[in-house]
Length: 192
Picture (cartoon, rainbow, N blue to C red):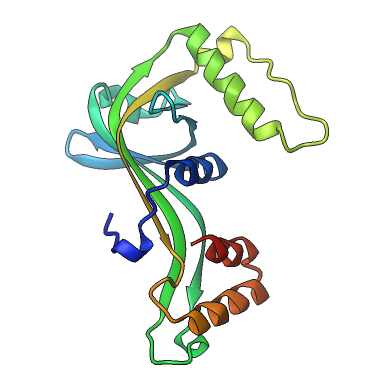
């Protein structure tokens, strides 16, 4: 990912929080010479530098993923930025937050490990509900999925939030984004 210095995020705590808050992304790999992508949720273990996920056994992507270098992309909120919001000259652009994670993938079918992954994903995604569903996966359900474990080799994080603009332009962009319902992106500008 191309990251000019003023958009680069290197703070590991900030990156971990972003990954955990935006854990649904794309697993990109090769099947023969074709580039393939599956949209799935991920579990991030920052301490072990591992991403865990699962996909349907019917999905052919896992069949050639063993020991393959893969790319995972995770994206936060994004929005168009009009140059009319600037006090000085500018061009149309887009503000966004994204993480690219590279690593070596391994597939697994161990039922105990698969159950831990689906239980943790369920817990992670049900935690915000007033009456969370308790995972109850049968052995037959687990046989229909394949686990993916990615040993992370690099993480790149880019928050393109108008940092290259004047303080007044940044304030104008932040106000316009908030007015258009992009509060999370506008709030993210406070932190960049």
